[in-house]
Amino acid sequence: MSSETSSQKPRVAVVFGGRSSEHAISVVTAGAVLSAIDREKYDVLPIGITTDGRWALTADDPERMAITERRLPSVAELAESTDGTVVLPVDPVNREVVYSEPGSVPKALGEVDVVFPVLHGPYGEDGTLQGLLELSGVPYVGSGVLASAVGQDKDYMKRVFTSFGLPVGPYEVVRPREWEQDPAAARKKIVDFAGEHGWPLFVKPARAGSSMGITKVDALDGLDAAIEEARRHDPKILVESLLSGREIECGVLEFEDGPRASLPAEIPPVTAHDFYDFEAKYIDSADGIVPAPLSPEQTAKVQELAVAAFEAASCEGLVRADFFLQDNGEFVINEINTLPGFTPISMYPRMWRESGVDYPELIDRLIQAALRRSTGLR
Image (cartoon, rainbow, N blue to C red; front, side):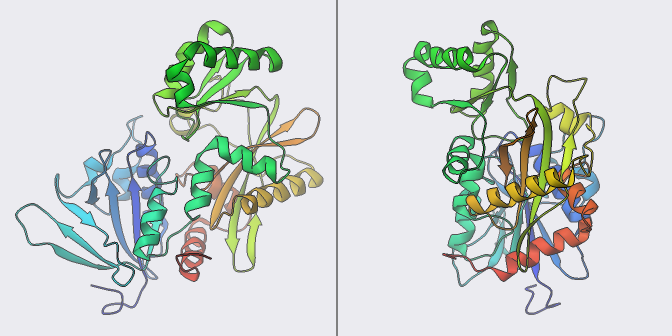
């Protein structure tokens, strides 16, 4: 079953799901990737991670991975067994994946040449899975351990950007021990921040994505509920001031000669929601404008900043960089996403499609970039 003994095609393990609150969006993303990957060029092995962390052999059935009638999919629904487990040996000289069930002889599934992780959030996008793959010696799509961790933690992401001279907006961080030991002092820190920068504030988990756990707080009486909502996703929270202006996104993709930026997109004001939240992104399908109606100079500037952010965080493969174009004409970088969504309505593939790289080519370029790199220090 290995690529050496059968078709000689590289074997790609698409790993999805995971333990984070973005589990369902990862499943949707995996469905889109599985639909687009070139089966004439690659062998594919879908592996799902359940919400409790079990690695499961799943059906290769993209249609069952979509959001249908506002219902979110899960790995548990796709798993071929309720207790079977997929194991990737932590051994750089052995890339053979093994499947085992209680009471049965383990079954070899063949070797894996590259992993395409489409996990979002903690335990997948944050460097943890990347560390496992480094130990296993298996190449993988996307950024390495450090860049993945920096890209997941908005606190340290902003610190890295600031150290490289990239423009970021005002923010404050409340760490777990601060809130647990002296919530009154932590609350005062946020109130003082509001006194300096004004209301409303955005309270969000420091290490989550897909707009999970974010609350727009218009006044003091909504602050405690917002903090508790953010802490449901992450004990460390981030507080940001409102930046008035336009929301602009830009994709970065690693080519043979280095990273390049896509045409940017604009996220228009979402009238049915307070901001571009989870429901707007994935359920109500808010429409982004691609390419963004910017001047040539503005387009060039945001592309330059997107690549600079990619390089500052030592990213590899791909990044979606999110910006605010302020009323004064200056760009401020909000965050980067090292494994952006690949759902049918996701902005990253849409931006590259408008830039001349269609979905199948995008998937192929990401896999080829991963195969060109070795694991370990580089």
